[in-house]
Amino acid sequence: MIRPYLRAIRMARASRQCASLGRGCSLSRRAVLTEMSKISIGDSCIITDGVVLNGLSIQPLGITLGQSVVLREYAWLSANGGAIEVGDRAFIGPFVMIYGISTCIIGNDVLIGAHTSIVPGNHIFADTDVPIARQGTDSKGIRIEDDVWIGANCVVLDGVTIGRGAVVGAGSVVTKSVPPMAVVCGNPAKIMRTRTSSNPRSKKAGANV
Image (cartoon, rainbow, N blue to C red; front, side, top):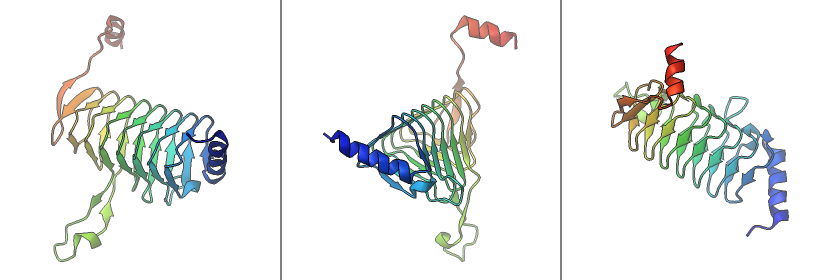
């Protein structure tokens, strides 16, 4: 068990080195934070063992976490010169990989299952005479709106927007934008159905809009 004074020392050091560190955060001593001056962490965040936050960016902030964000074991967020923004109460599961590159924006109350990869960028490969590794990358960015659930082992590719309230089934590869409230599955992910409210009041209210 970590002694309270050691925890206090670690948190005080992180508070000095990060762009900002909110109140009531839990930061594992086994988490790795680099380029901390580019990392902003909101109140009551939980950052567990093995989490990596790499804030390296040309933007003012490389990684921004809202309030009450939970990063489970070995999640890896790397700004890669761009910016990652995570909204309030988001849950990011074990071994999730999220890159910035240009921008990756994740809304409030988003759930991301274990081993998911979110990559807002692609290698350029048009020239067959030049190795792909030397042709650079292209990035349009990714946006995941509020109240989205992404299951385990998914891949979300560049240029995609996942609309509010959507569900992405486990193991899916999202290559195109997903409408709000859609349930998608497969490789490539396709719409299976649309979520509808089971609350009669909601249906009545919706009919009046």
